[in-house]
Length: 440
Image (tube, rainbow, N blue to C red; front, side, top):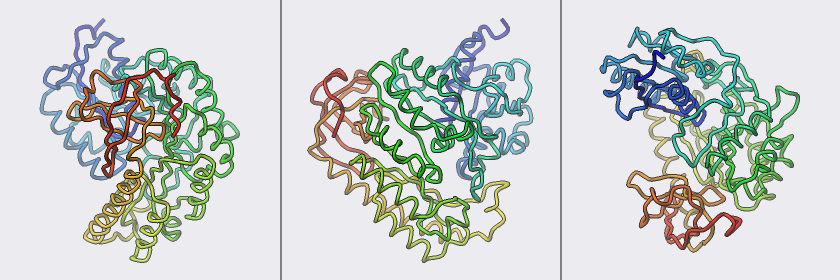
């Protein structure tokens, strides 16, 4: 085989769907006989899986391409930059090989034939070999593309292609395969989990989660980001599956702005009242809930009144975490053609909102001090410390312990302190999942 003895180095950036693409690509290279190495200077081939959803990230990708080009190795650029800003890649490195996100299953073919693969491949990504980034986490793509595809700011419709939901049976089979290999978390991911199955006639998300929760084994399920637009018809069913003991009580519900005027300019398809209605219903049925949301600061047309409405909304809903994005226009989007706000205004508003959400998160985390219960160690921190998650998917740092020894273990912890973006815990004992049901 031509690839035997060849070495591949990979860097993966962006969302969990990108991480899954990177795992699949490395799995395919390994199956084809490539050796995976840890440094670019050791490789014959460099794979870069890119993200371009935000301009600062896109700029970083161009910097990495320039840096990786300097090694003089064969370079594959996959991910959303390949499909959304491929001309920039080619200007920087004409010899680079571009692979569309929907063609990642053909990455070995692209490497060995040295050809760009920019069409949307019809094959799905389930059942492919994997090299897991984290042996505890199994990322399962459930669809490709965005069903809505009308947001004024978003480049994703141009990068990920048409919306297609994968069959439930194949998704369940993929989850089962990963669980059999020892993963303890199943992350259901897509560009929008809230629209899963609509192309098959109705929203199938609750059915999918129920089916995965029925798989034998000790594991927890994390449901990815859901556009509020599609949730009202399935709220009752959705809240019921969230009550399953295997489902993280973690709700990623992006709102983007607290102003209906700005939401209309963004063409998000819902109002603030819809967002709050969904959140209040889920909280009323589930009880404690870890809310993550997204905010874009400085969207064209956002005045001081709109910004104050966003601050007021955040103070009202009290999210556990907020992904704050300073607005930058992206290529080929409607927002690119609008009058842009002064960068200083955007920077100032970003600082204000960052401080607000930090304070909200800290106050919410302080309420956890004294809690004792079951958690899963699913990550190792930068200093080697274990990071565990309880059933609300709250990160718990166990400072005095060794992450390498505890990774993948079910533990009982006590929360002894809090920070704005994590809890500080003390390990009480290592247990089997049967030692507790994870309820708070």
